[in-house]
Length: 336
View 1 (tube, rainbow, N blue to C red):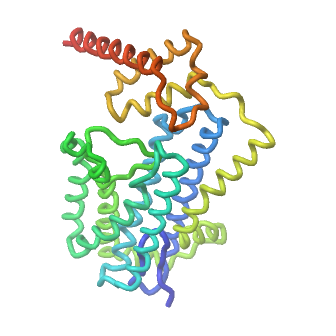
View 2: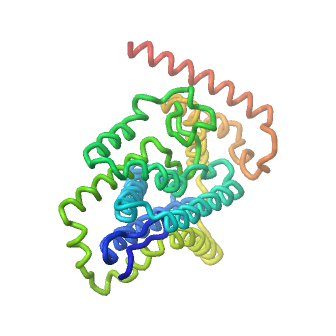
View 3: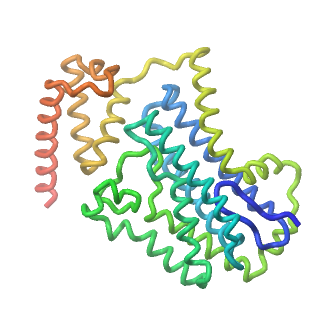
């Protein structure tokens, strides 16, 4: 009989046949991810407003996609290894995911060094594939309790003690480090554990046995194919989308960039890794006003990355930081 397999996570089913519904769910998540990445590409090339994909709706969309992938990782771990770890298949899938994660890190370190992916969705899947094995023999309710603790941890355990880059993968530093895809252990491993608990409950209720006999229509073929080859689709889709948007720039060039919005978005994103939101909003507004009044906004674009910060910009930043600190202090006093 054919086994239920997947590419993004280690998976070899103990059931007698493939559960198409799970492949379809994974394929649907990939479509949603492609939509989000396409929005990011449009923003990157200037077809969409700067900061569009950091707005609340887009952020929630991205988090729901990541959650669904990780939930399915937990489900797949139970389906694959709930009756006993199948080491040959596990090692093969694990090494594939690790290799893909390293490739993503290297590629983004070269392409976008200021926001490279050092612990994204694939890194989390690699971690969860190993850590999840420790929970295979635990009851569903206990797994759910641990999942709740993992999800709640960042609200109680964040500390400057974890601010060193060596600890960023945990997700407990006082502020999130800059990265285009940051999926640390806390709280995201909680989604994997919820998937494991749900799979155990589904097994106990006979749900998987019933789903095994569900045969979706022909409409589902593309989704099932994508779900079955999810790692390959994940790695290929974004370069393809970027290439298509790049080609579009040669035919229909994007509108001239809004430097003010672009600067504000970039400034606030960089500032957020060091200071709180009120300070960053005030500081970046001050910097933008100063740059515009001195007609120097365009001067900060187009410089080589290795160029040192000019003294006039350092002085401007220092003055705006003082003003923003003073403003934050005044607000705190008036609020008290």
